[in-house]
Length: 116
Image 1 (cartoon, one colour):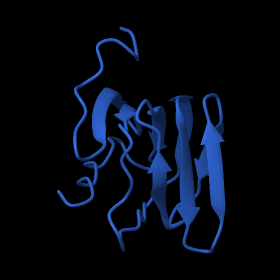
Image 2 (image 1 turned 180 degrees about the vertical axis):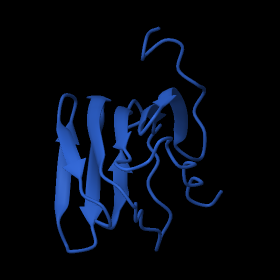
Image 3 (image 1 turned 180 degrees about the horizontal axis):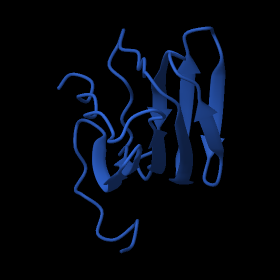
């Protein structure tokens, strides 16, 4: 498996590709293609999510006013219910996301993408 090849064709929304889902863990490749969250949309997740930007650049905005600029190699642990959104991503942005669901024998279904 290679996280950069092949990449899906550019789309109007982020493309989330499950890599591993077992027990209380889900690992995903996310291809952003220059996308941002729709106006007024905020992610509000039940559990923590660790993300690393493998390629490109991005900015994550948090409802509390924080803005985190990220470049390739940067990683971040997003706490449960830390409402956040993609402010912007570069056309080549590729992420690796790890979701941990403590207390769950299996990972709950993933949330639908914004607008989906």
